[in-house]
Length: 571
Ligand code: ISL
Ligand code: CA
Image (cartoon, rainbow, N blue to C red; front, top):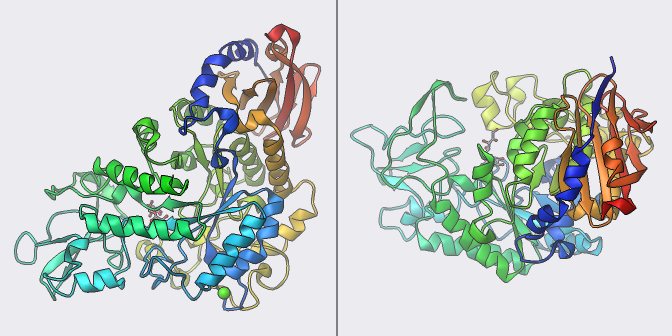
């Protein structure tokens, strides 16, 4: 069934209000005009999970030299910045999110000199390096915690959150860890409990202690001095806890461990978080570095707060709500409008190392690859910075372990079979059809997905219709069209239930995008635009979508992107 809808007047309204939009857009935080956007606003970011990207020495674990060997691939893809999840020395209980030395590299990944080489090789290719700062907690093996637990009088005692139980054998309160079980672990040596929002091996730092703050600020300075362009700040909303230790409200249902669910009201999102972020930003500004936030928010207004009053907090709080959206034009349209209108520079994320792969999450089980292509086109043509996750560009699938004994992520072992953990989105990158997908010459730490012989970067690099080629073309188009870099975002045909369409405009440059989120062909009227911008020059289409007789005929899950020129009547 063909469905017809129209872009009619939307285009005209959009074009007329362009000036007003522009002034808002041009307030980009640094006070600079949009034409002088900061590098991170124009950049395409790419998240690397180092264990799973490329193994250079055959031990089955990806490493820094492996990443260096793939920089040309990333450059060719069009990546401007890589964010590496933690590669600091760590017992690896939470695969690096349990740090025991913030100023070194874990030997399994290489050495500091390998790191320096990585930064300089990346820089040679115009790629900046972002590290992941685990600010909320350390490993229980970190010398700070080892000292802290040694005695109540220890120098680092107050670097962590120690409390007495409420009575003999009773915990300080009802708080739970989001990884299951109580958030308090008793420590017989000093007869108190320590607090951990994550695993017991990840004790929370006490951010109310200025010594802790200064130590973390110094860590960031140390890496900025080594050429790091910024940090992704891990679990920022968990930095502070209620000093009165009030009990959390209990909710219906069960958490991962089968205990009653609770609202983590007194453990997260305390207002003090923003003081810490301003201080971290102050230090970042000394080195013109950027802060990216792992900001799991419940609303756009909450997301907005992370930019800070007068943009004094993070430049790039991630919109992770995007990963939870349904793949449907109305749901996407509504959310994008809210984020775009929130006043900060949007940061769109469709997948990461904590959630199922985008291909399966947005997919309907039948057209997953087509849907992944639509999501790629969307993420790379919106107003804002895209952060990709490795493997997304080749359409990798979530590959969960089949047996509990094969699970590596401790949450998966705990919550099996209800939740199989995060291994599924962390399987080795599929480079080619050779031994273990070209990831390692040895035995990979997590099995390579069984589809690697046909689903890999080498095969897709030779196929003009592959998702990898689509990503390359999209990034290329993004780079060469000012409208896609800094242009306003104007939704079109907002009542259309199946097609998400919008216009991006920057001065004389305009790009129109139409995305069919349905499994049937759709027709979109092109009339409205002709009064302001016309003469479409097709930049990219999928599935044979095309402009026919003034209408855009979109294939099922089709993508149509075109550059427009301003007509004389559009002044
Ligand atoms: O992973 C999640 C759900 O599956 C999230 O709740 C996640 O644990 C939380 O957002 C914090 O994530 C970050 O810190 C964790 C680490 O395990 C995650 O990998 C990291 O992204 C603890 O450091
Ligand atoms: Ca290795």
